Length: 85
Image 1 (cartoon, rainbow, N blue to C red):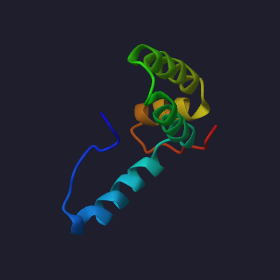
Image 2: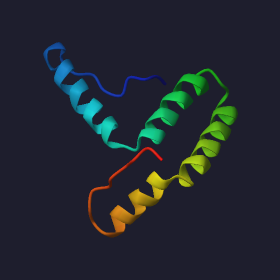
Image 3: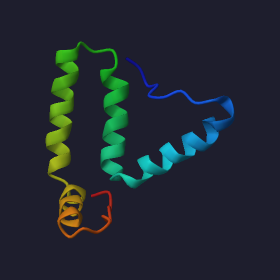
């Protein structure tokens, strides 16, 4: 298991990386930071310990204003306006 999720030809790598970067930029900023933190910290941990970290992060993210905005936007069938709070 590693950070590679797909392989593309060399001449398509930059375009694909930009598409992925745009999709990451669209998620709530707090969630993006927490995901990066978990990947960096949890990559070398035993699975049980990494899952505990993930569960704790999920609980923290569930209490954010961005989570509430995301749910509200989903219910209203509109794009969310994440603020990083």
